[in-house]
Image (cartoon, rainbow, N blue to C red; front, side, top):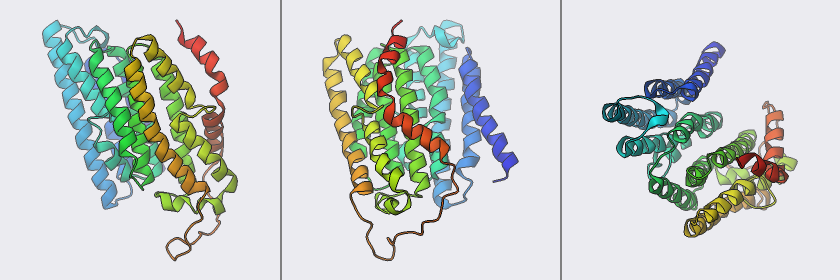
Length: 348
């Protein structure tokens, strides 16, 4: 892609998100979300592969549906309450519709079905943008409306953690596994949103760091299926021995970074007398842990099959810059000791 066009599209992505962050009026927030969608579509379809075009079309249709729902609900809210302010959502009907529209935007279960399909059709770089940056603007709006209906958030959160765990169990495609991992993590964030918004933000940030690291590892190895992970040992032995730690961090095992948000969320849910919800969420994390362990096993404990399609690739040095990978991997593994500092910041 022409670097000038790429720069304009990335600028559009950044601007759309920033407009949504800065807006207090529903129309402006909607405009920011639309700019975001329109800026990422050419990036998604840039390879002109039928699979990429199909994924782009699916993405466009779901985002357009969510945007139409958002616009409809904000107009309804203005009609019922006479004002357009995001933080003054008083009526339960538009608040619920907007919560569902934003859930569709980020891919929360039960409106998640587009996310694995879309991510599967994209290359890893655009997939990374879709899994991280594109979640920011809708999340900012969910945090601002602070939905009054707590039951809907807990239902969305629990279904997302369960479906995110179950959906990834029988997948062989890495991008689909990462999509289900994304759904499960978003479920954890939504569960605790109404009790501690700052904890939701902490979870979002740690998820970004771990996902960034995972995508960059797969990109360096040019891996798209579990089987191709087995050849990574010959390419980057040190990285291959560190990657299981990143994956287990995504699964939320101590003493890795990913344990911190899960631990704090379970603690918060227990404080709110939601012991059953916390138990179901903790058990659903075991489902996700299974497929992270499966990836770790395929990567470090299996040799690549020596048939023609699976022969060990040439050890060509990758042109990818490894500094972002090094920083994000170190952060994804080592940040648990900062948990006391994080809790001190979270307590008002």
